[in-house]
Image (cartoon, rainbow, N blue to C red):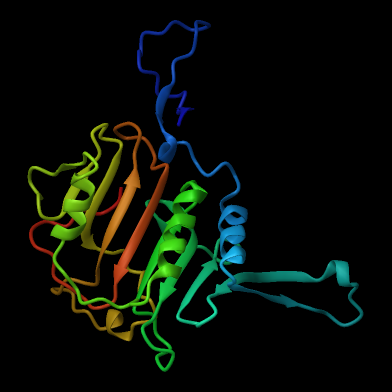
Length: 248
């Protein structure tokens, strides 16, 4: 499926004013979330039998009418029946950013109910197509083993290479891009706020590499803002080899 994209970046810069506008045209993963990212994912989770909880924090003054109540924060949390998986719509709270875009969905999993900490988490910004996040959650819901031993990046890179992606010449063991050079995948140090409630992230020294994770993003033109970004964070800190590539 293809859709017009980024009319501000025409394929032919010489297109005269008032002429037929030119568009970047790309596959579905460059077409956005259709403004239904929450609805599309929430419908999938409801079909899987996940429980939805809405938490509202606000301020209520004496003699204040209900319609005048000030809502400070609201969170929608979806929990799997075995409570080992959960997904939080965090855009309505105080969002932090990935690739200069607000994170909308945070998805986490743990191996045992006795542990309050997530074994790993994934983060998705706005404009990630809803079906991509839904497919990720359907696969997560079907898995029996949620915590797997850490393996090298070859498994991930081999998987994307099988779909035609190209390994980075300088970072062949850490990064890849799709054949159109609009979508990118890289293993490196994650942004500072991605901690997953792991206190060890707060004790990383200035000369030590912080937690590592896979980052993916779409950049339709050189220097253009990211359309969307995603991150899968590994709980245990790791020291990636070579240079680290951060999101723009």
